[in-house]
Length: 398
Image (tube, rainbow, N blue to C red; front, side, top):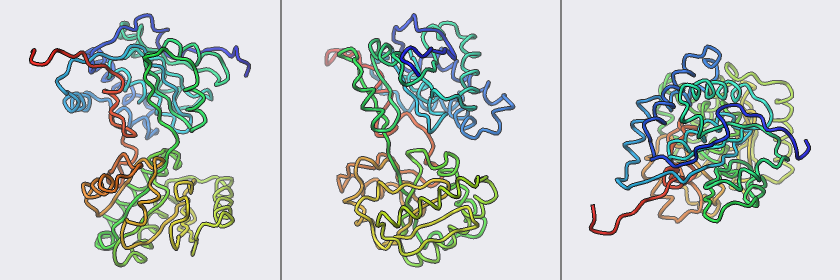
């Protein structure tokens, strides 16, 4: 599109009131709770798992829990106007980004992906309807759509007190190059990857129902977003005795789940097969490739390649490796790695492993099934702290 591509306003108005609010302001909590009810009552949203996840996240009970967890007893105000650029590969993230900014006390301009998407359009319509019932917030928040080549991002950046930027490394760099006020704070969610660690003896001890539950949880971590989410694991790292048998049981269960619930188009199957061939040509240390129920394909490594963070899967393609300890991972867990999901291993011990080895990567350690659970701490950022400022008082004063 040309640089004068139109700006389409999907919800709210151009923020005329950018005065900061306190974090977790009552009117913001009321708005998000109303939005949750609006989405949960929408029959078209009931079949959109990501929309239901967002609606469940911003229900009143969870908002109250988040408020209590982030009360640091400091006087805070939002930074002012936050400009958000949402990612195209995970459509619902624009709604989370808006909620993050509002909860931190900011006014917000959120650019949604330029290509229309059913999830974006449904949620944006709900936001617009609910904002109409909260006119003060409608004057502070807006959702917009425009082509990336337009001048609108530059105009919004020039006004921003904070920018929340989602996208690939190139997109982030281009957006950061746009002029912004001297005190503008950038929070960037760049392209990242994740992995899963499985304890083989713990998996072998599962009964069939528990194994199916684990496969379902892993399916939610990966297939729900077509493995596009930064927190979705692409590598499964097996630890402990019996790892070969455990892996076979797990992939069999996942294959059955995916075959039943993941409609794979022929073009996706071809693309997945092409990716497997390219992995061989790229020199990955592959010892075996197996398919499970035609829906899941697994490349087994004999050892870690030079750059495991660059090895990504899609449409049900995963890598796996069996090892005696996590130590071989240490040189490879750089800043590109975001989330470590785990089964059968103490999460605190894994977090201690990250800190004791002074790893540049891994910001989250969560159980299998929780990879996509968004929080106010994301990618290592405390978003309330990043998007608000502290009004300090002289020491010794109340």
